[in-house]
Every structure is written in C-alpha cells, then in structure tokens.
Length: 112
Length: 116
Image: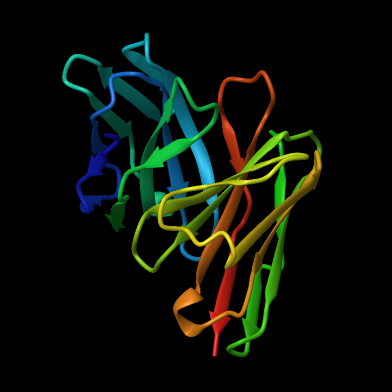
C-alpha cells in the first residue's frame, strides 16, 4: 500500500542547517515533493524531484533521494526564523496522474 | 507559477445547513482538481478527485452524498458540504495540476469551515 512517514518535530537554531527526513513505501512513485505550510495557510510547493534523480539543489534547499531505501530528505541551509512551518513530503503515483499521498508533516521550529 | 484560488477562506455555518466552497484555477485550465481535508495538526487527506465534465472519484470512506463535488468547467470545481455537522469542521484545500506538466500541483489557500 501507499504510506509516507515523517518525523513529527524538528528544532534547530537560526543559521544552522535543517534536515527533514521522509520515507515512502511505493516504489512506483514518479515524483516526490516537498511542501511548506505556514499556520492557517495552504500549501506552498518548495521543490520536487523526479524518481530517476538522486539529488536536486535549489538555492538553500537540497533534496536527496535514495530510491533503494525509499528515503527522501530536505536540507535547508542557513535556516531562518521564517522557515518555521510544517513541511510535508508527498509522492505521486505513476498510475494516477497528480494524485498525491502526503506524509504526516514535520513541524520545524527555528530558534533565534 | 500557476495560481489556484479558493473561496471563501473562512466560513461559519449552523449545523444542518449546506456550505459551498469554490476552487478556481486562475491562469490555467485544469481537467483534474483534488480536494483534501486537513484536521488540526494532521496531514492532508485526499477526499476526492474532481474531473471536468464527469463524476468525481471519491476515496474510500468519504461520503459522496455528504461531500458533493461539481467540476463544471476547466477552471472551476466546487465542494458542497451538505447538512453540515460540527464534526465536518475542518480545513479544506483544493489543488490542480497543469495538463501535460511535471505532475506539479498548485494548491489553493484553503477554506476553514466551522460548523456550530
């Protein structure tokens, strides 16, 4: 079945790097995504990676994909207080166009 | 990027009434839109897939008679919560994808429903 898991909480100091981890079970995933949700708001797409890639970098964000272990991570360099939010990883299935399965979300708290 | 707009952003209604939430793709056409529900401090749960010009596909456990979905045009999908009860209070989020795109979904801002 489809299952995406994340740790629930991460606290880092401002200026440090944050690493948010995600594991998934379905090996037929096509794309894997990271979304950010601020309190009371919708979701903002941060970045995504195609399943045949193992790394993608976009400014302060680095996504690493270990397809063998079905492990996805998001690294935020030089974490700022404005990065405090809930981060969701999600996978889309090759057989269902755009249908996303979300993880439970990781709440990132950035301490001054 | 593409913009998806939801309306209303907040709605409070009395128990037993029906509430309609709109989801619009503002600068692109979306043959498929998705409706999610999010309980406080929880993840998003996919409720249904809304297909333009045809019936919505509901996920297991979602009552189709309770959550009516209409996708009348390529830019508009509506979710109607019928005979709302306090347990329907939640944050409802829609999303839409670009046809032929990367699979990237664009999300609305969400609609917070409170049923008294």
